[in-house]
Each structure stands twice: as structure tokens, then as C-alpha cells.
Image 1 (tube, helix red, strand yellow):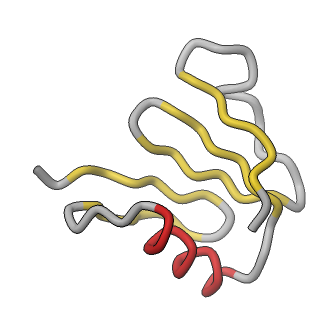
Image 2 (cartoon, one colour; image 1 turned 180 degrees about the vertical axis):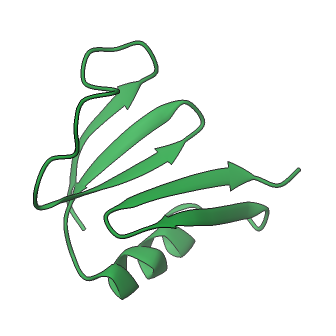
Image 3 (tube, rainbow, N blue to C red; image 1 turned 90 degrees about the vertical axis):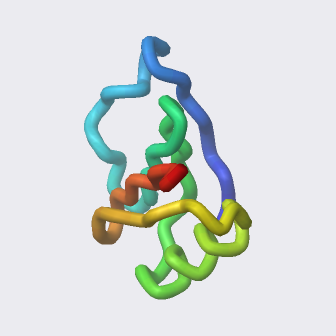
Length: 70
């Protein structure tokens, strides 16, 4: 997956509508936008990119929320 942009809470673009052809990953008051891929590939990417064992993934393609479980 190719990273396009990251927005922090309060920045312009953080609450904009979803862009077609992208995946939104919401974590720690940030919105990460990646070029879209298959849903099963996105979950595998999230598991590798956020190698924290206490992350819970919710949502469905194309928008996922990552929450710390500690």
C-alpha cells in the first residue's frame, strides 16, 4: 500500500469525506490515507505496520479504526 497523506485532529482534511480509491486508517487522533487495495491485504498491512500486540482493529473496507487495548 502506498501512503498518500496523514492528517492530525484539527487539521484541514481530517474530517473530509472519504476519497474514492483510498483506505482510511484512524489511530491516535490521526487519519492515515493510503491508496486502496483489497480488503484482506489492508488488514495484513495494518497488522504489519502497527506491530503492537495491543491494537484492536474495527471497521470495514475502506475505513478502519485502530484502538489501543491497554
